[in-house]
Image 1 (cartoon, protein in one colour):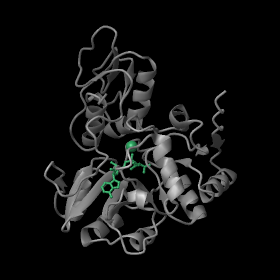
Image 2 (cartoon, helix red, strand yellow):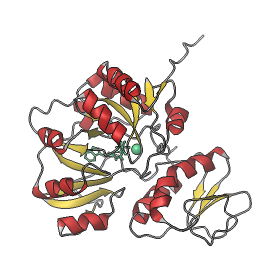
Image 3 (cartoon, protein in one colour):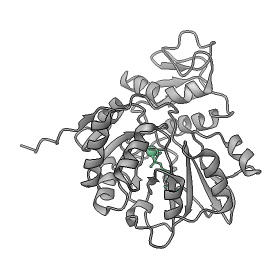
Image 4 (cartoon, rainbow, N blue to C red):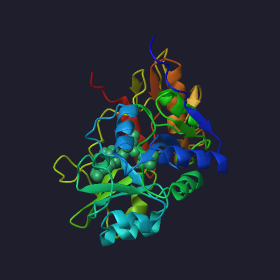
Length: 321
Ligand code: TXA
Ligand code: MG
């Protein structure tokens, strides 16, 4: 008989739960944690075995580097070199849903696999109180990709984590729903000039305002890339169509705004983009559970709508076999 997978502990969002999470992480085990964006699958960023276990639990390609989470901006600057633009953004948006890709400092101490061998590291200071408590209690950097099997929809509640990774990780700290609901905005720098690597929880217009210039959009010719930005990602099991105002029979229709009467699910009935961002992955999980093809109403390409449409396009993209 095959060995039974070990049970994944569900930890309560209290001092005892946080202490247990820290003890497991210190022992090199993996714990899914809530952040304000999505749940992250955390492991000790200095422990090569813990990092290997993250890639294995997710089925993640080894060439796709992980985001390193730290408690404070000082902790971030101890690991990497911040140019003026990076520091300006960090001061404005950390802690929060922003990740900065910056060159590693010598003697950083991170396991090599965290950055997939790149000379740069993606750093984030999460604002979620439970993530902050675990980082403070653990006392070191935590690598944490989104806590979903590679290529699947990101988790915004503990039940999503359990559905994807139960039996493959030590524990999940249950902090309820993630308030932002979309992953962090990722910003890199090319000779000091900002480059948007992934749209996300911080609006690009807000970044442009503090930077005094619009970040360049990453393109095929860019020297700087986010290796994980694959065309097909966030994939539900069933096919997904976008911009649908008139669903086909049999499709489950996800609406946006007050005009989508008859939609089985909605991102935001009142057409609010922050609400749509917060609900996006939970609604996709829910639609996917029906097993029916999914149709999504148009979402405006403004503000958080850029990040929402980015995730939807990748959820709809043809999948590699
Ligand atoms: O909100 C978030 O960012 C969540 C929470 C848990 O923090 N994390 C998250 O991680 O979305 P993940 O692994 O699903 O996405 C990380 C992205 C990948 O596309 C990866 O390629 C990129 O960050 N990345 C990581 N390190 C990088 C580096 N050194 N250079 C460029 N891109 C990097
Ligand atoms: Mg992810």
